[in-house]
Image 1 (spheres, rainbow, N blue to C red):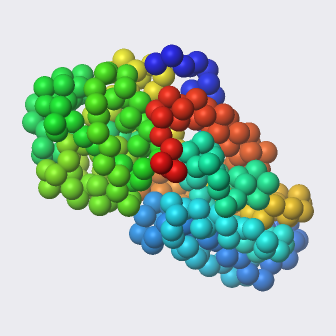
Image 2: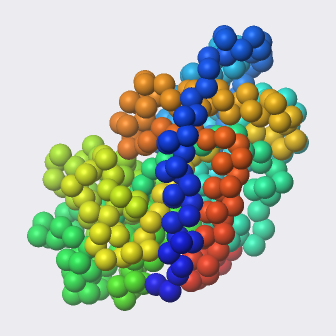
Length: 334
């Protein structure tokens, strides 16, 4: 692909750097600042998924230190857009946060002609909560002898009518990662969109589709059975959850450095000192051992950031995806 490698890796490098910043905060019992009465954390996806798990595990640590009571509310629909809209017009008093994956703020502006929210003007960054990578997995429809991207590419070329992949949604980052791979190897890699990764995995297990591009964590429980094989992961280095699986980069696709993050945002115009308190609370929660261990069961790396770091990473990702979406030629309004 004709893309600038620095542009591809900038946001991933920024995310990786957060791990060395020593960002864990002091407990709020030591600060002398009274907790607010209640906090609502809105997430745009159904209960049971990785976004929901992230929001609930972090929220459980925000009470009673930051808020006397913290609850999670699932507002599903429109690919996560409804949750973002929850911020608009609400009091900027630190009582509301939204958890969202990067795609909804960094990719949707390039795929929708008009959004019901402004990712910058309506959303005040608070902190990253978790980061993760994608995997390209194959199932029973593909011969067991296929264990690498090169072998899968050869199989797709020999079986063009079966060369397809599922993803959690049309216009999602895993959709685009697999689409870019298909273009890179010169095949007509047909996309089959689903409402979430798990329905796609069900069809993968049933042999109804050849492959699925989705979060690594969504494949983990099926790997011991041997019915699903991950052929590649999308990070700069191998995933610690599947260390025996080579990355896209290791398999010859040097620009394929794609990570996703879940980030916490609050109402635009919230006073800076309050935003900093919210951010410190999330960072402290993300650094706790039970959150780190709990996230690992979902293939997630617990991670925190300052508001300024999250804002910079969002801008980098938004800029990175503009030419890629154009290259793919996808529009959600088609």
